[in-house]
Image (tube, rainbow, N blue to C red):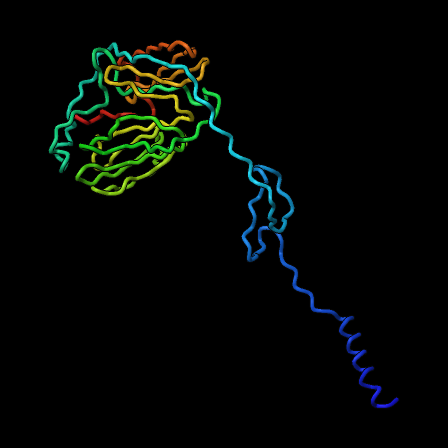
Length: 297
């Protein structure tokens, strides 16, 4: 064979060798949660509590998330009533410790744990019992406000819907610390200087008690409910709950000093339901608020 024929044969041999071997394989990548890629993993459509499956590489799908269910419509019914007090109320005095506290000593502010006017009890929280109204209600966008003013929490008691934001302010020219409890458990304990930013908190349930370790007589309450059908009795002991769906309900009245009372109520669209709660002043202190008046004067 002539030398001039060797070059084409060499080229053909080299091409055949190249086709037989091919390119080196890319190392296989791990799959599942441990895999690291340049793209963010897609959100899983698996529901909480579903059985675990073999790990899979993240996938992107074009399926849109299901829209959230709309809030339950409000009703047309109304619950009206009054909280009566038949016993002798505890006399409210100025806490002794105020005179020793800078800034707080400037004002003699009588305590407000028990306020009775003409046999009617103020600051009683009234609501339809938790879980007692069918449906779901989104927390309102409006923030509830608790203010520290004249070394007292204001308002003393109020209600919020679960997950509603609560702004805790300090309008006093002195340092406070906001120490909150749910039962005996401390939720948070945070100093709040004069002029400081509000502390914004949310809670899902329970009776939240607010205190101040610097000024131990200070006390306030935020009651969290899974619906908006609640209110607080006014100076004359009266209360009104509006836009209630028609039906039969368990109604609760809770006073921080005298505890819980309940009543059954039937609500109709065309006529207000009337309810009266009565406290004798001999009821034991509720577990959520023991010894509030102990050692105050």
